[in-house]
Length: 345
Image (cartoon, rainbow, N blue to C red; front, side, top):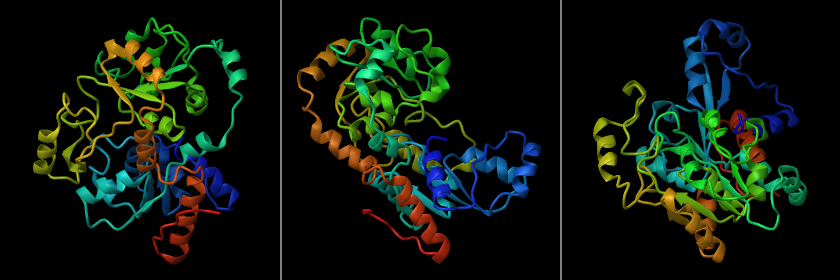
């Protein structure tokens, strides 16, 4: 939703005849929807697509990515990516992943990340927000925003907040799947409907594992800390639980990628690429207090890494992703040409 809504708002403003819909799990509940649904839809996740197809819908789709984290194995692993009529890469590193997986793919364009538009464009009153949250403006604000995995392991995601008990001015924003666990911790846990953008803006340090929030923080040049964990859900060498009928990649290809993974020496290796997604300090969870002190002592130490991966993860980072993507969709609709649009006046 957070990936599609900014684009939807732009589409409405540009006069598109469009709507934004929730697709139900039960196929018979979607019958009314598909009767009035366009022959071309825009998705940011594959499950609604499968539900629509199972409900009898036949058409084409455009794919918008729902994150800026390139590490995980599922990006471009599945068939639906490669059958997209138009696919927008959030940033150049995603394009490199597609080229490594399917060098013949011709339907991709660099678009950026619609959710990041508000991160770049919206201004907040930091003092007012800190007062509202009852945070001490004289001390650093620490944001912990882990990826998902809490329901699978006590060593994943949100459960690492156990190591943050002595840290003051702490905000925890878990992945949507793990919100039910976050209330167990003594920290500010904003409502899920608040979104994360304003909290990244007020943070002095952003801490995560493999979540795309690291790239979002880097866009604003916020120092980050990456937690080194025993494993990351959705990353090699973890086995994919999905049915193999959805895989684009062969079993041999996947096996080789699993063998290349080295969680101890290269915990942030990007799947299918010989690149490491490192944006700042790395530490194990039990070293988080010391690492926060290290980061605060030199906040510019990893500035170049942040800049590089902000640009590689998010194309342009200019707050104009939604309008850029909308214009490319319009051009494609009227001409059939997939035309790359870069800078916008």
